[in-house]
Length: 314
Image (cartoon, rainbow, N blue to C red; front, top):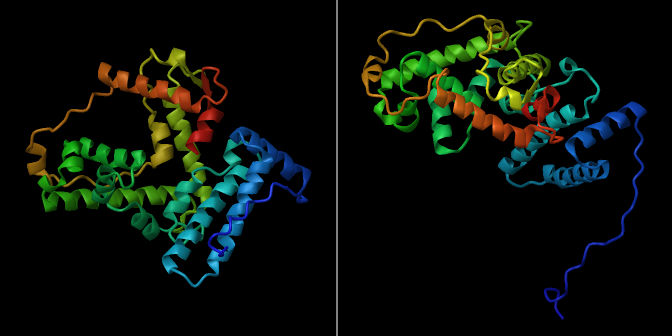
């Protein structure tokens, strides 16, 4: 019998115990986090050990630099996620870290110091965002919605820019991208609370929490502190100016150039989105909310609390 004919060795069915020392507080926080995720502590630890065992040797291989860089990128993303999961489970919301997966995706060199150049490079121009969204390569509802909102605010048809970008003139695209670049700079300045030119995870997290709170309050139509069936028949709660200022900042980009997209503003609309106060818009929101119950209602009691919403949005 050749080596090729020999049956493959089956993995051993035996298991062994590994003693791990940690403080009572760390243990309690870890078990609480595992419970909220619906997983056993043993399963989470085994996954972490397998990931480390597979990643460690890979970092020392003389193989493809792209593969190694990708592995380190994944490890950095995992580290940010680990910070969130293992943070004290009983800590108040303002003391936890939120949006760290998004922060890590923007922080190009993973040094936990987000610069404006890194932010712009990761997010791209307005046209980049719409192109990725249309092609299905990278869809972000928040970023796509932000660009489309800018277009709508300036009497431009977002469907045309999304689906038929070749029908938009170069000068108009230049104007849109320039306006969006300034909008990015204002957003970055708002994130940079201490004005040192760098956004820290804590600064990013604080505004991410405010954004999640604003979104929850908009869905909590009757203002009872939860999303439930009674909210379905009530009008959509538009964010207050104070809430919008907290999340987006008070400063807005400079005035839109009046002549940049004159030709595009005169073109026929390819589609007409429903008005925020129309029945069609209300129906869209209700359908989306019904889908949220299935995903966000952890204990299936028909009520989505802020903690449940926070767990999915962070």
